Length: 176
Ligand code: ATP
Ligand code: MG
Image (cartoon, rainbow, N blue to C red; front, side, top):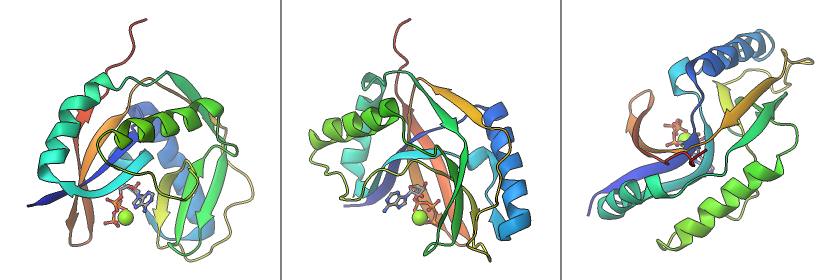
């Protein structure tokens, strides 16, 4: 049986992604490394890893009905994952609504036989990879406010030199 590597994510609007690209450029001055492409920037809500192709289809069909409670997250913080040599942007503190979106998503996924990872949720948007200096910049650009109302399901394909993402489904926003 073939498998597909999947993750659920919040995907920024093009203007927000462009602002995040500015955050990436500023951080690169301090940390070096490789800037992620603007159109691939995202905040992972749940990384599923490889799942059977049949389950991937089932999840893609079910995703529109898993409606997120709309929320807002302030991106006001640079962080570093030292081991992975990643610099990221995210909220300094995880908002309760975003934590609830993560927890609710994993509860829903449990119904498909999938289990949440043991690590706590650390919301982040990867901006740089292969950083040369592990110290994040002292200051940040002006904080960004991200209002979200949906999530996307993404298939991630390994290619030489990185991964290619394909959005295969999205949750339907709640009626106003
Ligand atoms: P590559 O691994 O090829 O360098 P990538 O990390 O962008 O590329 P994936 O590994 O498919 O692609 O990961 C997709 C998303 O899920 C990324 O945002 C990644 O940071 C996140 N992710 C990957 N592995 C995990 C994990 N074990 N726990 C939490 N998030 C993860
Ligand atoms: Mg990866």
